[in-house]
Image (cartoon, helix red, strand yellow):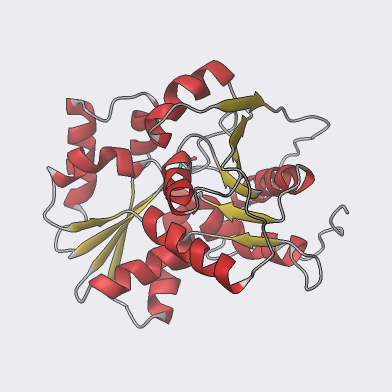
Length: 287
Ligand code: DGL
């Protein structure tokens, strides 16, 4: 069973590609919808949420977790890999950032735009991955209004079209634009109306990379029965109602999970760091 983790509904746009590409595999999707959106959250909170969520998927029996959320993938992927995936652990955590960068570089000679959440753009992780591939002509735009508009089901409204046009104004001159947030594929029509740039949904590339990874790691995840189960931390009725818009089909098996025995502490950060953030003194993981 392959775990797929996102801040909420959005990762279902990635899950649909994974299920299409691997119809015989079993998937457990975790949407942290009770605490979404993640895009404006501070780094430490994201690391806490990400640890809880991947531990939930590991505890449920997944050995392989795909972090579908761009915000988590850009900020916390390395932390998750170092914490949970030591050699011999038999666990892996994969992200969406490198597939997104590679897909963009493959089809773009000119400027690449990154449209994403505030935390994703602040991390500059996609910019760094594009630079590793030799592509330096990159411009980013944070679009904090777009994910909430999609969650509201307003992707086909004048408000959504106006917001897309306003954000894309800052990405004029781009040949391609990476849709660096799991919600944005639902805004394709509104975005296309506002730009001539090629809009790149990383979802199909993430699926292709997962197929390739499984082929190179035979036996890591067994062929299943094509079962898709979803867990969410937020309102189950809302998740069921909105989730099918993102997944493109009804969610057959949906369960509610809640946070317990956690704590909040005051934190003062002068300036948020860029790039991946690995906690220096994490206690050893469970199990
Ligand atoms: N899943 C998040 C991402 O892809 C988008 C929504 C959020 O801000 O939580 O970055």
